[in-house]
Amino acid sequence: MADRQTGRVRVRVPATTTNLGPGFDCIGMALALYNEVALEAEAEAFRIEIEGEGRGQLPEDASNLVYRAAAWVYEAAGRALPPLRVALVNRVPVGRGLGSSAAALVGGLVGANALLGNPFSPEALLARAVEWEGHPDNVIPALVGGWTVACMEGGLPRYLRLEMPEGWRVVAAVPLEETSTRAARRALPASVPFEDAAFNVGRTALLVASLLTGRYEYLPVATQDRLHQPYRQALNPAMEPAIRAAREAGAPGACLSGSGSTVIALARERPEAIASAMACALAEKGFWCRTWVLEPAREGASVREGG
Image (cartoon, rainbow, N blue to C red):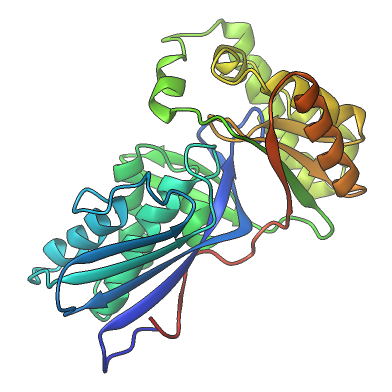
């Protein structure tokens, strides 16, 4: 919540993983790994402080995405932007396909909106976030939590929020190497063969149906992809060995997280063993990574007490 006495607010925003294999730009999931964004209005002077992931890498001036998002809220509300102190505690790695930019964007929008007494509805913030990002798959679960299926209609996002079934974990193998989102977008072709489009449509439908009905035996097929992963392989050389190791260790599904470089596996049993198998397989190929076993996050961006 915002502290009206001091003009302070703190927002917690989850990491996100997207696509889940075939659901390119339309499926996303919030993960229980959080960035914290603290905003203080009427500070003595403008200042940005960064702890954790991205420290020394992310800008600490007015080009910082959190600050730019907050500034937009003030401008759109017709309010003068005061000196802001922005304090970031980042746990989501930068450039690894886990939604660090979406977390920054949503944190700045939600935090500034709370400071001003919430002049904008969540739907208005969501529309602005999607417009800014260019696609809905990361920002929607970052804002609302759960796992989401989305599309764009008339320039506006249309989505359904769903709950991941109990017992699932997301195993993330996070290589040291980053993947540029812009480069990953440029790697995609302008068109794809009809049979590849049909391949992904069927598997996206099967993925959603499998998770909703509990028919998890279909996940090995339902997490396959032909629209983006083959074209991003050169940018993500750790992808194939990590996916193969996860599947051999018993993961029902494994895929690139977003545009990479992280590879995720869906697991109900032995997630730590799957994480170990992925790390060992990558080490054998000369790739070093961190591994996390994460729960799906039910809660999206939330305004919390204190600054």
